[in-house]
Length: 418
Ligand code: BGC
Image (tube, rainbow, N blue to C red; front, side, top):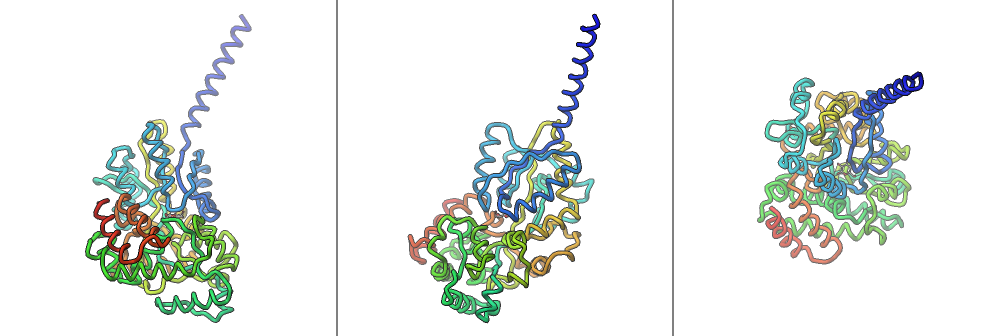
């Protein structure tokens, strides 16, 4: 009798423990992302820590691969098997594609309660919302048309920051002539496309970029200006080292950080690598706009798309969305990530010189109408068009076709993918 009483009490205790264990497990989020480099992981830690402080456990689902192509493949498998993660890092048109599939959460109540509408710029809202419903929380604004340079090499060779194509080439010649790798590059399609974003603006100007990559105008895609842009890619190819093929972007950043290479053409996530290595802007490295693109900003914004999850996981999901949208978090995160806050009311005065420049130029470009979504990072056209564009850029970069053919192929490929 006593024993059975004991048993039933202990069963009750176990039951309670299980129950509270289950309740604790509900407060967890599974997050799919591609932030696996040193700088990226350091930035993501800010979010993990904030959530853990709010009592939410972080289940990490990292899928390496800059630009996120591999992460998107992993996501498709998860959604197809009926088991999407709580939240997924995503870019531009990919967000809208998933929104149309009807598998994403509705964040309207939270967005209204926290007043997101008033503080997220319209260029980002275009991707955070679909059919009047918020489905994603934007964490930052990156831009792709930057150059990251080793200051010691620039000083040693008496180089100034180039502001035109000719000055850039003169600088690269000097760096190469001094025995350094002039351009640190990773031969992956998305990295070549990232450089192409800048080269196309530098060659044809902002209006041309828009016509080609946003309006997808066949005449712009297959034009003499585009041929010239491809020729410039061939020129840049002559400044990379022999081992560029397949190299990850952060390893290319490391070449500049370690003083083996002069410059890297890359989005401002590269700054995260320099900072993570203990380097300081203006002292150890320089940041400046890709020569000839001053005044134009090609942007991308990482957003966390919230997928439809069971009611038991909704509260934790909303805590995640709310944490991402907190102004102080946005500042702390973006200082490390290299990007700038996605909220117009976040105080950017504590950002470093590159961050300040980025914020100022973003605002100016937005006012002037020279702020455009990045082709390379999914903010100019849907994934099918983006990937078709990548293929042509990379085939040309690797010498598989001349510039004339590349421009024709580009127009054909985009037309086929539209
Ligand atoms: C993302 C960045 C990321 C970079 C390299 C870009 O598409 O927007 O957040 O750091 O890819 O992985």
